[in-house]
Image 1: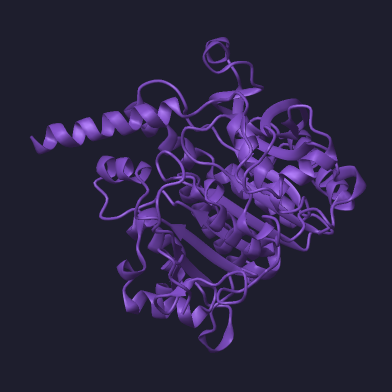
Image 2: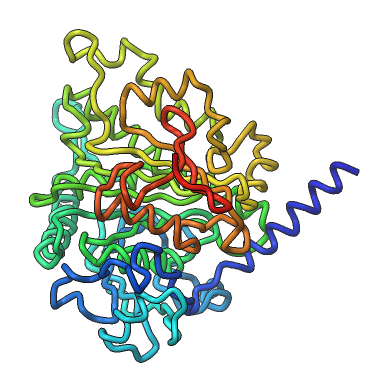
Length: 448
């Protein structure tokens, strides 16, 4: 009987998750609390004239293959599908906010707790601006027998790299902040749904940073169990591509800070990519924080086993032979700013992962009391990690997207990314429950 019950639970939840992925128009996320009238802060006071439009123009980077005819029949016309491409492509994706809203109307609706007009998102023009060479890159053998890079292939790589950096610089010139936000989605997402989430986050960040999303070949159709397995391996496949993308963006002249926001299964991909970037820098005797300028690394509803996440985050602490280039046993700084982890014990979507992987615990379901004091002490010493739990009622079907569906949570995220407010300050008055753990007040409770 327990086996039947578990199987039924997975089947019901999985059916809802797969059905929930739609590439058609969807409603803009609710207005975050800090913007809601009558006392809310203005949203777009620093937006430049070019940004004062109902469209949100995003930079996209992807290793998805072009959509097939079968995928078009199932998901509608999209530029990229679920297949894995042996190259990185980048370009511009426009998300249209409407229908038929001028800038003044959109601004007004973006500050209402209860909107008086429909505000929906739809995918507009998508323009591919460049591609890196197909992989593996070609190589040659020199006259002395040494293996060398093919010069023409290397030239194509450098041209693509310069093209991506030129696009970042062009967008920096139009942005109020010289920062780049990169959103990495999770399982059961299409190119369009990833663009929608990136666009609404960008919109409520006042359109101040350069807004980008990295979209990888997550599965969104077919049998749930095989689809999820495929997605897990596709995330591993995309690690090298995300690394290359983040490294290229961070090295772009003029970029002063990088904000990385990853959701669900995308957090596993992101953690591994950031960890490998850190190891690259450490091996070269360089400080990762200075090299990659990661101001915020935010893990939203992380779909990753707690022990695996712990290894990715803290393994270099337990390997003194790896970090040998700094005197007095000093540890390098990985982040310029902070790592913030948002969790919810009510996240029903992660229940499926926990069952499928037989995981002791998924990070996205952790409560503050689940983090041992010994581990909290590690993070307290570094002073750069916070875990924030949301334990209120679900504001979306599976309680997995509360960072956009819940105005309190999205407000806290915006205070962190846009305004750089530390926890405990006005606007981020959460309840501190441990050395590095916090939770949102519930049932009228006030912060301590």
